[in-house]
Image 1 (cartoon, one colour):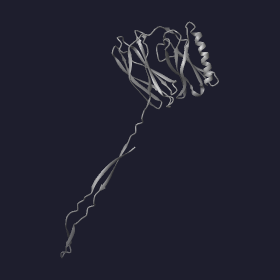
Image 2 (image 1 turned 90 degrees about the vertical axis):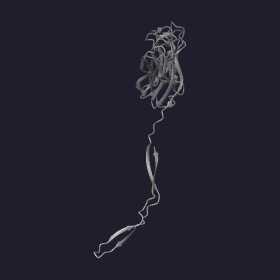
Image 3 (image 1 turned 60 degrees about the horizontal axis):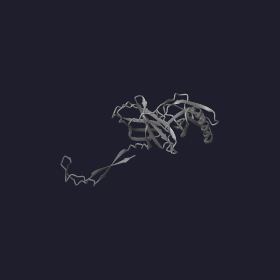
Image 4 (image 1 turned 90 degrees about the horizontal axis):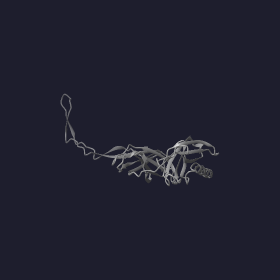
Length: 290
C-alpha cells in the first residue's frame, strides 16, 4: 500500500504543479494517515503551501481508492482547520470516506482547485489559548480551554481546531468549533469533542490551532501544540457492609426461689437474690467491598 500511495503522490504533485502554473512552487502533503474510525476510514493530513502565494480562502480534496487502485470516493470542498493558507505555512484537514473500511485501501489529499482561491495576507491579531486540558474515554476525546482576545479590535467568529496525532506523528483526525465574537479583553471557554479510535497508539497527542476575523480579514493563526492526552479513570462505587461483633460475659442469675406450702396446696414462689446483670458490650465494625 505504501508503494502505491507514493506513486500516486508523485502524480498528484505533477497535477498540482499544472493547476498552480501561475505560482512559483507547489504543495507538500505531510504527516498523513488513513485510520479506521467507527466502521469507515478517515484520511487526515497536513498540506504545506510552497506556492509563493498567500491565500485567505481555500479548500481541500481527498480521493479514496480500493485495493486495486480504483477510485471509490471523492470528497471535495473539504474545510481545513484554518481560514488562511499563507506561503510557507500549513493547514490541517481530515475527512471520512463515507464507505466501509473494507472498500478503501489508500487515499490522496490535495488542494481543491475547483474551489475559489482567495489571495491576500492575514492581519496579526492578538489572541491566546490557555487552561488547556485533554481527556479520552474510549472513542471520545474532549479538549477544553480558554480563548482570550487582547487586541483593540473585535475578534469575530474565532475558531478552535483540534488536530489529533498518532504515536508515529501522523494526523489521525481533526475537529473544529466556532465561538462567539470576542471584544477587547473578552475571553470564552471552549470544548472540542473528537471521535477517535479506541487505541493508545492511534491517539497520542493533540495540537490546538485558532484564528478569527478582524474587519473580515483572517488573523494569523495561533497554536498550542504537543498536548498529551489523559485517559479518564473509571469511577468505582463501593458499598459499605456493616458487621457487628458482641464481646463480654453472658449474664448469670443468682436468684434462688423459695416455696411455702399451705393447707390449700397452693404453692407460691418468692424469688430472692440479686437480678442478673450483663457485661455484654456490642461493638460494630464497618468494612467496604468494591
